[in-house]
Image (tube, rainbow over all chains, first blue to last red; front, side, top):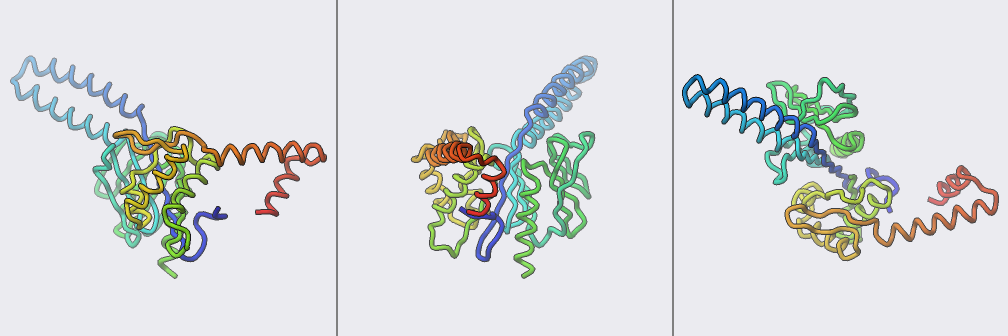
Length: 167
Length: 115
C-alpha cells in the first residue's frame, strides 16, 4: 500500500472524479415545458415557423443541459485536465499540462454556479454546485472552472505532474 | 478517486490498478454503487493499455468488489473480503487495547509508529 498517492520517483498519479446533478436536469426540463407552452401559445397567432423555431431551440438547449449536467467526468494528471460530458464521454475538453498556468481550489458561491456547461470567450465553466471547485488558469488567459468530487486531490495531481515536468 | 501506479515497478500494472481500487474502497474514497471510469479513459490517463485496465477490473469482479453492467460500466458492489478482514482485525485490536487501558489516541499513535 502506498503511503502517499502522489509521491515517489517513477510513480504516476492521476485523479478521476464524476459529478452529476439531477436537480439541474430536472429544473431545465421544467423550464423547457414552460417555454414550450409559451412558444405554442405565441405561435398559435403566428405562422408555423414561429412554433417550430422556438421548439427546436428549446430541444437543443434541453439536450445540451441534460448531457452537460447529468454526468461530468474529470481526469487530472500528467496528461493535463480532461472533462468529458454525458454517458458516452462526448463532448470533451482537454487542457494539456503545458497550457495550464495555475491550478487552484476556489470557494464558489452558489449564485455563480453555471448548472452545466457555460462558455464565453474568456471563461469555460462547468459547475454543478457551490463550495470547493477546481479553477484552472490557462496560458492564454482563459479561466476554466469545474466541479469535481475532490477538488484538492485534482489540483494536487496537476501540481505534482507540473513539478515532475519542471524537474 | 486517486490512482497511483509506477511503470518502473516489478509489480504488474493490472495489480497496481486493482490495488488502487482496493485502497479506495478500504479508505472510503470509493463507496458502494460508485461507478469507475471507463477502461479506455483510465487507460489513457494512466498511459496503459485499455486491456490492462480491463484485466484489473475483471480481477476485482472475480473478487466480488466490482460488477459489470451493460451500458453502466463497472460499479463497486462491496468492500470485498480484504476490507472485512481488516475491519475484524481492527475490532480485535480495539478490544485488546481497551482491556489494557489504552484509548483512541494511544492506538492512533501506535499505528502511526508502525506504518
